[in-house]
Length: 532
Image (cartoon, rainbow, N blue to C red):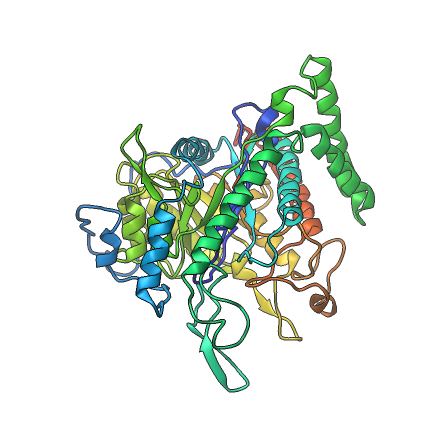
């Protein structure tokens, strides 16, 4: 499930399927909460390498001073500087709300988070591919069963396509605190679990009661997703038929029909071999949820000690990530995350110092446990080419095991002539393919392959709805179309058609890479897809 850069959003819960069987690899994707992303079953993780025999020396700023974390507790973050947190006008009401949430049942469970960590460890070793997708900011008013179903469905479809193409299982903050219009300056909208998006003073006041509504919405979403995942909606036969329907009605359908029919033929072979369509492997899927760890009081209130292991888990979501603006080594968000046992993500841009990234990983994963850390690179292709190799070399030189994932959305945001933010489909595609997928002996290898790492997955902001927020795609959305169905509360999202088209193109490249690697004796292991 998805990545946003807003201050505090509802936990986005997006499904993330994964499976131990190749047949199950198609399963859904992980849901992002808050800024939630869904992981679809294809998982392709990056192997952050065995310790390098000759550590690479990195030129640049002086080494970051060693962080010396003290004893951790669920409240130790309060002694640190906390950025991007709202100021509530009534602390007594805030405390009352947090005590109420502390008594609520967990939204997710420790065992589920541990299983996801195992799947992400496969991705880190190049044995799976991560599909993480969802809204940038989930709203209360758009919360309904149809929207949840549609996003879950598109993740299922993307996971099936990526799993077949890669032959691996698929694992399914505001920059300014104020906003000004017509000379009126108000606090920025930070997500529905903090304040409202209406541009008036009352709506923009942080309201702690919104956290209770956010909890209820997250719990209801997860309950519905569990029903979809086990009740037959996620059957492989159904998902394959959806993809065949897409190719028949797509303007570039001929391009994708061969792959869709190959999946259909594979299902026929499996049925002939005795694996019928009513087998649980073919009718159910696993999923996980994810979101940015931003609103620390809410996260603390849902943190529980696991009775079987004695470890603490943030039970608001299976997977949490720290954002570009809150990843300070001595900051409150890093302090909180170092003590919870959930698998964690780190958003990095071209501004990240390689030495600082190594220190941050040391703080969050001192035991160097595979699957614990996912690095999500959010930068455009040009900056990736210059900046990302230094980060990869630093991590490899330190012998740290991580999963490398591309966020091709945030580095490609532009302003349309009408004033709306948008993202060109072609730029998103080029950015992702440049980093991870295209392999040919006739061209320069992508960054991860050059640096000896594996492509681990993709992190998308997307929806199952027919919105017009990103331009391009085979069903071309133009600048003039943007205002017709521009519904996002934060950043522009790929619509259902664009998301599935992207999955087909990625699957084609994965397949070409797999064939090329077999021919040249490289990258000859196939990858499962994970959904998040």
